Length: 370
Ligand code: NAD
Ligand code: TDX
Image (cartoon, rainbow, N blue to C red):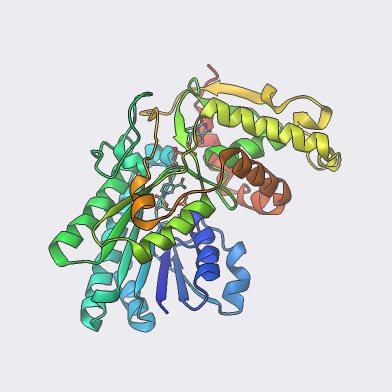
Protein backbone atom coordinates (compact mmCIF):
# COMPACT_ATOMS: atom_id res chain seq x y z
CA UNK A 1 0.00 0.00 0.00
CA UNK A 2 1.35 3.44 -0.92
CA UNK A 3 0.50 7.02 -0.17
CA UNK A 4 0.58 8.67 -3.60
CA UNK A 5 0.85 12.34 -4.60
CA UNK A 6 -0.46 13.17 -8.08
CA UNK A 7 0.42 16.71 -9.18
CA UNK A 8 -1.75 18.30 -11.86
CA UNK A 9 -4.46 15.77 -11.02
CA UNK A 10 -7.24 18.13 -12.18
CA UNK A 11 -5.76 18.36 -15.69
CA UNK A 12 -6.59 16.12 -18.63
CA UNK A 13 -4.16 13.25 -18.04
CA UNK A 14 -4.18 13.80 -14.26
CA UNK A 15 -7.94 13.19 -13.94
CA UNK A 16 -7.70 10.08 -16.08
CA UNK A 17 -4.74 8.89 -13.99
CA UNK A 18 -6.62 9.36 -10.70
CA UNK A 19 -9.44 7.11 -11.97
CA UNK A 20 -7.04 4.56 -13.48
CA UNK A 21 -4.96 4.42 -10.29
CA UNK A 22 -7.99 3.88 -8.09
CA UNK A 23 -9.12 1.01 -10.29
CA UNK A 24 -5.68 -0.60 -10.55
CA UNK A 25 -4.54 -0.05 -6.94
CA UNK A 26 -7.65 0.45 -4.76
CA UNK A 27 -5.65 0.18 -1.51
CA UNK A 28 -3.36 3.12 -2.27
CA UNK A 29 -4.19 6.51 -0.70
CA UNK A 30 -4.29 9.30 -3.30
CA UNK A 31 -3.64 12.99 -2.76
CA UNK A 32 -4.03 15.42 -5.65
CA UNK A 33 -2.42 18.84 -5.74
CA UNK A 34 -3.47 21.25 -8.47
CA UNK A 35 -3.23 25.02 -8.80
CA UNK A 36 -6.55 25.05 -10.69
CA UNK A 37 -5.31 27.06 -13.67
CA UNK A 38 -7.58 27.59 -16.69
CA UNK A 39 -6.69 23.99 -17.75
CA UNK A 40 -8.03 22.34 -14.61
CA UNK A 41 -11.45 20.87 -13.99
CA UNK A 42 -12.49 18.80 -10.98
CA UNK A 43 -15.95 17.75 -12.06
CA UNK A 44 -14.89 14.16 -12.67
CA UNK A 45 -13.29 14.07 -9.20
CA UNK A 46 -16.09 15.74 -7.22
CA UNK A 47 -17.66 12.54 -5.89
CA UNK A 48 -14.28 11.13 -4.90
CA UNK A 49 -13.41 14.35 -3.07
CA UNK A 50 -16.81 14.51 -1.35
CA UNK A 51 -16.67 10.92 -0.02
CA UNK A 52 -12.97 11.34 0.88
CA UNK A 53 -11.82 8.62 -1.49
CA UNK A 54 -9.10 11.07 -2.52
CA UNK A 55 -7.60 14.04 -0.73
CA UNK A 56 -7.64 17.18 -2.92
CA UNK A 57 -5.45 20.22 -2.30
CA UNK A 58 -5.72 23.40 -4.28
CA UNK A 59 -2.11 24.57 -4.32
CA UNK A 60 0.95 25.45 -6.33
CA UNK A 61 3.89 23.08 -6.71
CA UNK A 62 6.18 26.12 -6.36
CA UNK A 63 5.00 26.54 -2.76
CA UNK A 64 7.82 24.71 -0.93
CA UNK A 65 6.24 25.15 2.50
CA UNK A 66 2.94 23.63 1.37
CA UNK A 67 4.69 20.69 -0.30
CA UNK A 68 6.73 20.06 2.84
CA UNK A 69 3.59 20.07 4.98
CA UNK A 70 1.87 17.62 2.64
CA UNK A 71 4.82 15.24 2.80
CA UNK A 72 4.83 15.45 6.63
CA UNK A 73 1.11 14.81 6.81
CA UNK A 74 0.69 12.11 4.16
CA UNK A 75 4.10 10.35 4.11
CA UNK A 76 4.03 9.90 0.32
CA UNK A 77 6.09 7.05 -1.10
CA UNK A 78 5.02 7.69 -4.71
CA UNK A 79 4.91 10.97 -6.64
CA UNK A 80 3.45 11.13 -10.14
CA UNK A 81 4.37 14.61 -11.33
CA UNK A 82 2.09 15.85 -14.11
CA UNK A 83 1.48 19.49 -13.14
CA UNK A 84 2.60 21.71 -15.99
CA UNK A 85 1.71 24.40 -18.42
CA UNK A 86 1.10 22.15 -21.41
CA UNK A 87 -0.05 24.07 -24.49
CA UNK A 88 2.61 24.89 -27.11
CA UNK A 89 0.71 27.87 -28.60
CA UNK A 90 0.36 29.46 -25.16
CA UNK A 91 4.10 29.01 -24.57
CA UNK A 92 4.72 31.04 -27.73
CA UNK A 93 2.46 33.87 -26.52
CA UNK A 94 3.52 33.79 -22.83
CA UNK A 95 6.62 31.67 -22.12
CA UNK A 96 7.20 32.83 -18.55
CA UNK A 97 4.41 30.78 -16.98
CA UNK A 98 6.04 27.69 -18.56
CA UNK A 99 9.41 28.37 -16.98
CA UNK A 100 7.78 29.08 -13.63
CA UNK A 101 5.81 25.84 -13.38
CA UNK A 102 7.69 23.38 -15.59
CA UNK A 103 11.18 24.33 -14.38
CA UNK A 104 10.92 26.07 -10.98
CA UNK A 105 7.86 24.07 -9.94
CA UNK A 106 9.56 20.80 -10.86
CA UNK A 107 12.66 21.89 -8.95
CA UNK A 108 10.67 22.80 -5.81
CA UNK A 109 8.76 19.54 -5.83
CA UNK A 110 11.86 17.42 -6.46
CA UNK A 111 13.83 19.06 -3.72
CA UNK A 112 11.00 18.85 -1.19
CA UNK A 113 10.49 15.15 -2.00
CA UNK A 114 14.20 14.43 -1.61
CA UNK A 115 14.38 16.22 1.76
CA UNK A 116 11.26 14.48 3.04
CA UNK A 117 12.35 11.01 1.90
CA UNK A 118 15.83 11.41 3.36
CA UNK A 119 14.47 12.67 6.67
CA UNK A 120 11.90 9.90 7.03
CA UNK A 121 14.23 7.13 5.86
CA UNK A 122 11.90 5.83 3.13
CA UNK A 123 14.09 6.79 0.18
CA UNK A 124 14.83 3.11 -0.59
CA UNK A 125 11.20 2.33 -1.34
CA UNK A 126 10.08 5.72 -2.69
CA UNK A 127 9.62 6.62 -6.39
CA UNK A 128 9.26 9.97 -8.17
CA UNK A 129 7.87 9.80 -11.72
CA UNK A 130 8.37 12.85 -13.92
CA UNK A 131 5.84 12.82 -16.78
CA UNK A 132 7.38 14.46 -19.83
CA UNK A 133 6.92 14.71 -23.56
CA UNK A 134 8.38 13.58 -26.88
CA UNK A 135 8.63 17.27 -27.85
CA UNK A 136 11.97 17.46 -25.97
CA UNK A 137 13.52 15.48 -28.85
CA UNK A 138 12.56 18.09 -31.46
CA UNK A 139 11.29 17.32 -34.94
CA UNK A 140 11.82 14.23 -37.14
CA UNK A 141 12.24 14.22 -40.92
CA UNK A 142 9.59 12.06 -42.67
CA UNK A 143 11.75 8.93 -43.10
CA UNK A 144 13.85 9.15 -39.91
CA UNK A 145 13.61 6.46 -37.20
CA UNK A 146 11.26 7.17 -34.30
CA UNK A 147 12.62 8.79 -31.10
CA UNK A 148 14.28 6.38 -28.69
CA UNK A 149 15.39 7.07 -25.12
CA UNK A 150 18.88 7.93 -26.42
CA UNK A 151 17.72 10.48 -29.02
CA UNK A 152 19.38 13.88 -28.46
CA UNK A 153 17.35 16.70 -26.89
CA UNK A 154 16.46 19.40 -29.44
CA UNK A 155 13.44 21.33 -28.08
CA UNK A 156 11.93 23.88 -30.49
CA UNK A 157 9.23 25.66 -28.47
CA UNK A 158 9.41 27.38 -25.08
CA UNK A 159 7.08 24.60 -23.83
CA UNK A 160 9.41 21.85 -25.06
CA UNK A 161 12.47 23.68 -23.68
CA UNK A 162 10.83 24.02 -20.27
CA UNK A 163 9.96 20.30 -20.19
CA UNK A 164 13.50 19.45 -21.31
CA UNK A 165 14.88 21.58 -18.45
CA UNK A 166 12.62 19.68 -16.02
CA UNK A 167 13.90 16.35 -17.39
CA UNK A 168 17.51 17.48 -16.97
CA UNK A 169 16.90 18.56 -13.37
CA UNK A 170 15.34 15.20 -12.54
CA UNK A 171 18.23 13.37 -14.14
CA UNK A 172 20.75 15.49 -12.21
CA UNK A 173 18.98 14.72 -8.91
CA UNK A 174 19.31 10.99 -9.60
CA UNK A 175 23.07 11.28 -10.30
CA UNK A 176 23.89 13.84 -7.62
CA UNK A 177 21.64 12.98 -4.69
CA UNK A 178 20.50 9.42 -5.39
CA UNK A 179 16.92 10.62 -5.95
CA UNK A 180 14.73 7.58 -6.77
CA UNK A 181 13.28 9.18 -9.92
CA UNK A 182 12.22 8.01 -13.37
CA UNK A 183 11.15 9.91 -16.48
CA UNK A 184 8.57 9.07 -19.13
CA UNK A 185 8.40 10.86 -22.49
CA UNK A 186 5.13 10.27 -24.27
CA UNK A 187 3.50 11.27 -27.53
CA UNK A 188 0.26 13.24 -28.08
CA UNK A 189 -2.54 12.06 -25.81
CA UNK A 190 -6.24 12.20 -26.66
CA UNK A 191 -9.44 11.04 -24.96
CA UNK A 192 -12.01 12.20 -22.37
CA UNK A 193 -11.54 15.47 -20.43
CA UNK A 194 -8.97 17.00 -22.80
CA UNK A 195 -9.10 20.78 -22.82
CA UNK A 196 -10.66 22.17 -26.04
CA UNK A 197 -7.53 24.21 -26.81
CA UNK A 198 -5.84 21.01 -28.11
CA UNK A 199 -6.25 19.78 -31.71
CA UNK A 200 -8.76 16.91 -31.39
CA UNK A 201 -11.31 18.45 -28.97
CA UNK A 202 -10.96 21.83 -30.67
CA UNK A 203 -11.87 20.35 -34.06
CA UNK A 204 -14.76 18.28 -32.67
CA UNK A 205 -16.30 21.28 -30.89
CA UNK A 206 -15.78 23.66 -33.82
CA UNK A 207 -17.44 21.14 -36.15
CA UNK A 208 -20.44 20.78 -33.81
CA UNK A 209 -20.76 24.58 -33.65
CA UNK A 210 -20.33 24.97 -37.43
CA UNK A 211 -17.15 27.03 -37.03
CA UNK A 212 -14.06 26.82 -39.33
CA UNK A 213 -11.60 24.00 -38.57
CA UNK A 214 -8.26 25.88 -38.45
CA UNK A 215 -5.45 23.59 -39.66
CA UNK A 216 -2.06 25.26 -39.17
CA UNK A 217 -0.09 25.51 -42.45
CA UNK A 218 -0.59 22.69 -44.96
CA UNK A 219 -1.53 20.16 -42.26
CA UNK A 220 1.25 17.72 -43.15
CA UNK A 221 2.63 17.72 -39.58
CA UNK A 222 2.60 14.26 -38.07
CA UNK A 223 1.83 13.28 -34.46
CA UNK A 224 1.84 9.81 -32.86
CA UNK A 225 -1.55 9.57 -31.11
CA UNK A 226 -1.72 7.81 -27.73
CA UNK A 227 -5.03 7.13 -26.02
CA UNK A 228 -4.93 8.53 -22.49
CA UNK A 229 -6.06 5.18 -21.00
CA UNK A 230 -3.02 3.43 -22.53
CA UNK A 231 -0.81 6.23 -21.22
CA UNK A 232 -2.14 5.97 -17.66
CA UNK A 233 -1.69 2.21 -17.62
CA UNK A 234 1.92 2.66 -18.74
CA UNK A 235 2.59 5.32 -16.07
CA UNK A 236 1.45 3.01 -13.27
CA UNK A 237 3.61 0.18 -14.67
CA UNK A 238 6.68 2.41 -14.99
CA UNK A 239 6.47 3.82 -11.47
CA UNK A 240 6.16 0.27 -10.09
CA UNK A 241 8.53 -1.66 -12.32
CA UNK A 242 10.82 0.86 -14.00
CA UNK A 243 14.50 1.13 -13.10
CA UNK A 244 15.50 4.23 -11.14
CA UNK A 245 17.30 6.84 -13.24
CA UNK A 246 15.88 5.44 -16.49
CA UNK A 247 13.74 7.08 -19.13
CA UNK A 248 10.87 5.22 -20.83
CA UNK A 249 9.25 6.41 -24.04
CA UNK A 250 5.50 5.83 -24.35
CA UNK A 251 3.89 6.06 -27.79
CA UNK A 252 0.62 5.06 -29.39
CA UNK A 253 2.08 3.64 -32.59
CA UNK A 254 -0.52 5.74 -34.43
CA UNK A 255 1.25 8.24 -36.70
CA UNK A 256 -1.20 10.47 -38.56
CA UNK A 257 -0.83 13.88 -40.17
CA UNK A 258 -3.13 16.69 -39.05
CA UNK A 259 -5.10 16.70 -42.32
CA UNK A 260 -5.89 13.00 -41.86
CA UNK A 261 -6.89 13.52 -38.22
CA UNK A 262 -9.25 16.40 -39.02
CA UNK A 263 -10.83 14.56 -41.95
CA UNK A 264 -11.36 11.50 -39.77
CA UNK A 265 -13.03 13.65 -37.10
CA UNK A 266 -15.32 15.14 -39.78
CA UNK A 267 -16.23 11.74 -41.19
CA UNK A 268 -16.88 10.33 -37.71
CA UNK A 269 -19.23 13.22 -36.87
CA UNK A 270 -20.98 12.94 -40.26
CA UNK A 271 -21.65 9.24 -39.62
CA UNK A 272 -22.86 9.87 -36.06
CA UNK A 273 -25.41 12.44 -37.33
CA UNK A 274 -26.56 10.09 -40.09
CA UNK A 275 -27.16 7.35 -37.52
CA UNK A 276 -28.84 9.49 -34.86
CA UNK A 277 -31.34 12.10 -36.05
CA UNK A 278 -31.61 13.64 -32.54
CA UNK A 279 -28.09 15.10 -32.95
CA UNK A 280 -29.31 17.53 -35.63
CA UNK A 281 -31.70 19.12 -33.14
CA UNK A 282 -28.98 19.42 -30.49
CA UNK A 283 -26.31 20.83 -32.84
CA UNK A 284 -28.24 22.66 -35.60
CA UNK A 285 -25.20 24.73 -36.70
CA UNK A 286 -23.17 21.61 -37.53
CA UNK A 287 -23.16 21.04 -41.34
CA UNK A 288 -23.94 17.35 -40.71
CA UNK A 289 -27.30 18.46 -39.29
CA UNK A 290 -28.39 19.28 -42.85
CA UNK A 291 -26.57 16.36 -44.50
CA UNK A 292 -23.47 18.36 -45.54
CA UNK A 293 -20.04 17.00 -44.64
CA UNK A 294 -18.12 18.69 -41.79
CA UNK A 295 -15.15 18.62 -44.17
CA UNK A 296 -16.60 21.78 -45.76
CA UNK A 297 -15.48 23.63 -42.60
CA UNK A 298 -11.78 22.78 -43.06
CA UNK A 299 -9.62 25.88 -43.46
CA UNK A 300 -5.85 26.29 -43.57
CA UNK A 301 -4.47 29.16 -41.45
CA UNK A 302 -1.09 30.75 -40.70
CA UNK A 303 1.32 28.15 -39.33
CA UNK A 304 2.57 27.89 -35.74
CA UNK A 305 6.06 29.46 -35.44
CA UNK A 306 8.74 26.75 -35.04
CA UNK A 307 6.11 24.09 -35.77
CA UNK A 308 7.69 20.64 -35.31
CA UNK A 309 7.04 18.59 -38.41
CA UNK A 310 6.90 15.09 -37.04
CA UNK A 311 7.01 13.18 -33.75
CA UNK A 312 7.15 9.39 -33.52
CA UNK A 313 7.99 7.20 -30.54
CA UNK A 314 9.92 3.96 -30.40
CA UNK A 315 8.40 2.26 -27.33
CA UNK A 316 10.49 -0.93 -27.53
CA UNK A 317 12.12 -0.38 -24.12
CA UNK A 318 8.73 -0.08 -22.38
CA UNK A 319 7.61 -3.31 -24.00
CA UNK A 320 10.75 -5.38 -23.45
CA UNK A 321 11.58 -4.22 -19.89
CA UNK A 322 8.11 -3.73 -18.46
CA UNK A 323 5.89 -5.72 -20.77
CA UNK A 324 3.59 -2.78 -21.40
CA UNK A 325 2.06 -2.18 -24.81
CA UNK A 326 -0.58 0.26 -26.03
CA UNK A 327 -3.77 -1.36 -27.20
CA UNK A 328 -6.19 1.35 -28.38
CA UNK A 329 -6.16 1.75 -32.17
CA UNK A 330 -6.56 5.33 -33.40
CA UNK A 331 -9.83 4.85 -35.31
CA UNK A 332 -11.46 3.14 -32.30
CA UNK A 333 -10.08 5.67 -29.81
CA UNK A 334 -11.17 8.60 -31.96
CA UNK A 335 -14.70 7.21 -32.36
CA UNK A 336 -14.97 6.85 -28.55
CA UNK A 337 -13.60 10.36 -28.10
CA UNK A 338 -16.04 11.95 -30.56
CA UNK A 339 -18.83 10.04 -28.79
CA UNK A 340 -17.63 11.37 -25.41
CA UNK A 341 -17.70 15.01 -26.61
CA UNK A 342 -21.16 14.46 -28.15
CA UNK A 343 -22.43 13.08 -24.84
CA UNK A 344 -20.65 15.59 -22.58
CA UNK A 345 -21.77 18.89 -24.09
CA UNK A 346 -22.39 20.09 -20.51
CA UNK A 347 -18.69 19.57 -19.71
CA UNK A 348 -17.20 21.39 -22.69
CA UNK A 349 -19.74 24.23 -22.73
CA UNK A 350 -18.65 25.03 -19.16
CA UNK A 351 -14.97 24.92 -20.10
CA UNK A 352 -15.29 27.11 -23.20
CA UNK A 353 -17.15 29.92 -21.51
CA UNK A 354 -15.38 33.01 -20.17
CA UNK A 355 -11.59 33.12 -20.21
CA UNK A 356 -11.33 30.52 -22.97
CA UNK A 357 -12.96 32.93 -25.42
CA UNK A 358 -10.22 35.48 -24.75
CA UNK A 359 -7.61 32.86 -25.66
CA UNK A 360 -9.40 31.92 -28.87
CA UNK A 361 -9.41 35.57 -29.96
CA UNK A 362 -5.73 35.91 -29.09
CA UNK A 363 -4.51 32.74 -30.85
CA UNK A 364 -6.74 32.67 -33.91
CA UNK A 365 -7.45 36.41 -34.32
CA UNK A 366 -4.10 37.13 -35.96
CA UNK A 367 -4.07 34.06 -38.20
CA UNK A 368 -5.13 34.56 -41.79
CA UNK A 369 -6.62 31.94 -44.05
CA UNK A 370 -4.02 30.58 -46.51
P1 NAD B 1 -3.17 19.93 -18.65
O1 NAD B 1 -2.75 21.29 -19.07
O2 NAD B 1 -4.49 19.42 -19.06
O3 NAD B 1 -3.11 19.82 -17.05
C1 NAD B 1 -2.08 20.35 -16.28
C2 NAD B 1 -2.58 20.56 -14.87
O4 NAD B 1 -1.49 21.11 -14.09
C3 NAD B 1 -3.74 21.55 -14.75
O5 NAD B 1 -4.78 20.98 -14.00
C4 NAD B 1 -3.15 22.75 -14.05
O6 NAD B 1 -4.07 23.44 -13.22
C5 NAD B 1 -2.02 22.12 -13.25
N1 NAD B 1 -0.97 23.10 -12.91
C6 NAD B 1 -0.39 24.00 -13.75
N2 NAD B 1 0.51 24.73 -13.08
C7 NAD B 1 0.51 24.27 -11.80
C8 NAD B 1 1.25 24.62 -10.65
N3 NAD B 1 2.17 25.60 -10.65
N4 NAD B 1 1.02 23.93 -9.50
C9 NAD B 1 0.09 22.95 -9.46
N5 NAD B 1 -0.64 22.58 -10.54
C10 NAD B 1 -0.44 23.24 -11.69
O7 NAD B 1 -2.01 18.98 -19.12
P2 NAD B 1 -2.07 17.44 -19.54
O8 NAD B 1 -2.32 17.35 -21.00
O9 NAD B 1 -2.92 16.70 -18.60
O10 NAD B 1 -0.54 17.04 -19.32
C11 NAD B 1 -0.10 16.48 -18.08
C12 NAD B 1 1.39 16.26 -18.15
O11 NAD B 1 1.71 15.40 -19.24
C13 NAD B 1 2.19 17.56 -18.41
O12 NAD B 1 3.36 17.50 -17.62
C14 NAD B 1 2.52 17.51 -19.88
O13 NAD B 1 3.73 18.19 -20.15
C15 NAD B 1 2.66 16.02 -20.10
N6 NAD B 1 2.37 15.58 -21.48
C16 NAD B 1 1.12 15.80 -22.02
C17 NAD B 1 0.85 15.34 -23.31
C18 NAD B 1 -0.48 15.54 -23.97
O14 NAD B 1 -0.63 15.19 -25.14
N7 NAD B 1 -1.48 16.07 -23.29
C19 NAD B 1 1.84 14.66 -24.04
C20 NAD B 1 3.10 14.50 -23.45
C21 NAD B 1 3.33 14.93 -22.16
O1 TDX C 1 -5.95 24.82 -34.00
C1 TDX C 1 -5.02 24.01 -34.17
N1 TDX C 1 -4.66 23.69 -35.45
C2 TDX C 1 -3.64 22.83 -35.73
O2 TDX C 1 -3.35 22.56 -36.91
C3 TDX C 1 -4.28 23.40 -33.08
C4 TDX C 1 -4.63 23.72 -31.65
C5 TDX C 1 -3.26 22.53 -33.39
N2 TDX C 1 -2.92 22.27 -34.68
C6 TDX C 1 -1.81 21.33 -34.97
C7 TDX C 1 -0.50 21.65 -34.27
C8 TDX C 1 0.11 20.28 -34.08
O3 TDX C 1 0.81 19.89 -35.25
O4 TDX C 1 -2.20 20.05 -34.47
C9 TDX C 1 -1.08 19.35 -33.89
C10 TDX C 1 -1.39 19.04 -32.43
O5 TDX C 1 -1.45 20.27 -31.75
P1 TDX C 1 -1.72 20.35 -30.16
O6 TDX C 1 -2.98 19.63 -29.85
O7 TDX C 1 -1.58 21.77 -29.75
O8 TDX C 1 -0.54 19.43 -29.59
P2 TDX C 1 1.05 19.52 -29.75
O9 TDX C 1 1.51 20.88 -30.06
O10 TDX C 1 1.47 18.43 -30.69
O11 TDX C 1 1.50 19.16 -28.25
C11 TDX C 1 0.80 18.11 -27.52
O12 TDX C 1 1.56 16.94 -27.49
C12 TDX C 1 2.72 16.92 -26.72
C13 TDX C 1 0.49 18.56 -26.09
O13 TDX C 1 -0.24 19.77 -26.12
C14 TDX C 1 1.73 18.71 -25.27
O14 TDX C 1 1.40 19.01 -23.91
C15 TDX C 1 2.47 17.41 -25.30
O15 TDX C 1 3.69 17.52 -24.61
